[in-house]
Length: 145
Image (cartoon, rainbow, N blue to C red):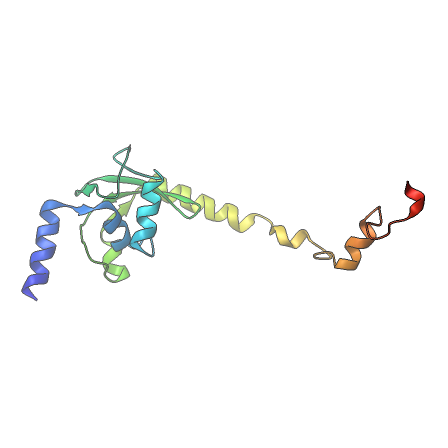
């Protein structure tokens, strides 16, 4: 038990790797998914593209895309371990602008029509595709020469 407290204290002093923090704060399901997004240059720390090994410090501002939503959060806590969701939510604070953009995007998705709803008949069958075809590819006649 004493060892765990020491690890958290050391992490607060030295910082935590960016990929590990994103995973621990529950923005990504696995650490490798977080590292993949970072590797593609989709995560910025203090308005600079960062590497997975970047050490985060308290007060850093992160900008990244989570699914279809752009998020901007300020680091309030550091932890190298993934804990319960309630603990993870205490590790960051989302900026008001980010919250507004996220809610606006959710409203747009809610109001947007479902593309699949416009299909009335579904996918054509093999027979339908044959009827649509103008030429008969299976008949070879001597007259065509």
